[in-house]
Length: 137
Image (cartoon, rainbow, N blue to C red; front, top):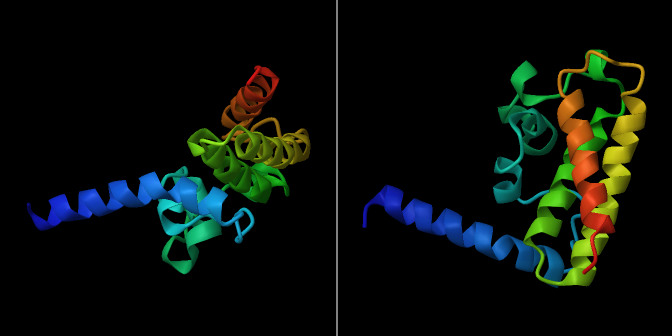
């Protein structure tokens, strides 16, 4: 197996084990994603979670065109991703409720910014979370 093949196996293993860490340890970091979880987020979340290596307009949500509540959207995506990987229905519901709170905060903060470039993504994420929460388990 090549070095890149080994890397792919390690990344796959980390992705597979990430939900176990989040649910088994009680999510000790709050909404802060692991490095693997952060790389699975849209690029505009990277500056928020991965620090100085990712500075620039493509790595953040423009506050001036989207509003001051945009820093809640990416933690909402972290919670949504954890919900989607959770095998435990109670943990999944908890993550979905957390995701809803974060994304709803973003939706409300974005109301006065009709030209926000990620408006559609925020709205569709909120709709998806609501649909997941309303479906019977």
